[in-house]
Amino acid sequence: MDRPIDPERPLHTDEMKALRQLAVTKFRERGRAYDVDCDMPLENIQELHEGGWLRNTLSRERGGRGSNLDTDDPATYLQAQRVIAQGCAGTAHCVQVTNHTAWCLEVLGTEDQKTRYLDPMLERPFLGAFVGSEAKRKHMYMMNTTAKKVDGGFVVNGEKNYATNGAAMGFAIIFVALEGSEDYNQNHQMIIIEPGMEGVTMDHTWYRPNGMRAAPSPIITLDNVFVTDKQFLGEPGAYPRLRWQGKFHLGFAATYLGATEGMYDWYLDYARQRGRGRDGIVQMRTGEMKIQLEAARALFHHAITCWKTKPVVEAELASMAAKSTIAHVAFELSHKIIHAAGSTALFDEYPLSRALRDLETHVLHAGHDRTAQIIGQAEMGESFDSTLQR
Image (cartoon, rainbow, N blue to C red; front, side):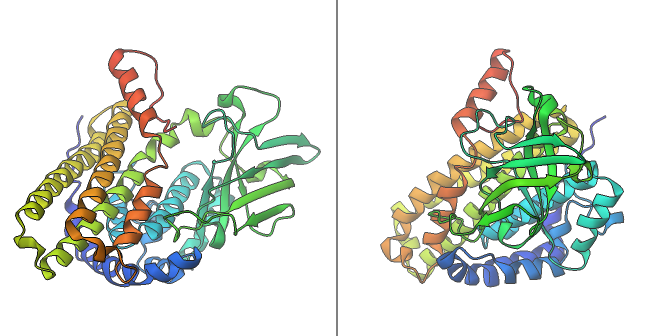
């Protein structure tokens, strides 16, 4: 039976309004300093912890807000993600990663793991990292990092990159391949590691991208790291078989949308103050941007609703469509805003240039050509996997 929801309702709460005010003032103001040296947005993270926003996806019994796609409230965590991104996309991505990590661990973790890695989130900003990315992967679920069985446990070797939150993480969920099987439904394994474990090192100098510099994502090297099965999260193949990757499409879409909205709202204030709003061409371009944003918002909200009204695969496809569409709208608005605002708006004293760089960098996370191909495969009745994004 369909369960109607209002995905916009969380935006109207006093808490969410206060979060937006925090994001577009303090978070935006701090963004320039974080950007210079690729620093973790620790002040932002502390304030978000105090407000409970780092625990959105955890159950209320565990001290969270009880919002994720598996609950009756699929919208709050996504709308919070969107609102944070209106002020700082890098901070929003750090929040996204730790919320996705907490969600997965609460569902699949043992009681011991939940006590060790979820309970500290109530006391301090205890961030999780979800690290699947690595160089030269043949497939999203086929890892070059391996875990070899030895007496008493496993030895892990490999190199992972884009470890968001690595600079301040409490723990990381690492994707590895168990030796002995070539089928990723059997060999894909999540393991939990902690900073300071023997053989675990991080290269914090590697991450120097054009944008999203406030979401430091170092390389993690695992050199003969010994783990026991107590550090295994879920059974082998649980991540692909349970379609976890498909649950995360909308987290990225929320950041894309929020960052685009933040850039657009800033542009409106700037253009009005400069008197550019009287220019007919600027008016036309602004109208075009507003139309595109409204379409992106509608698709985002439709996709959230699909998780409660449609089968899982249909919801995944709708989420992929929303994510890709919002990314294209972000690129379109970036181009139109710089022409409508003028070159002075790109000076360092303003946040526009950082917002542009953040969007240019972050929307490349998903392979949008691949997304379109997967949706096309579905339309043509061919086999497809709607959890994939590359």
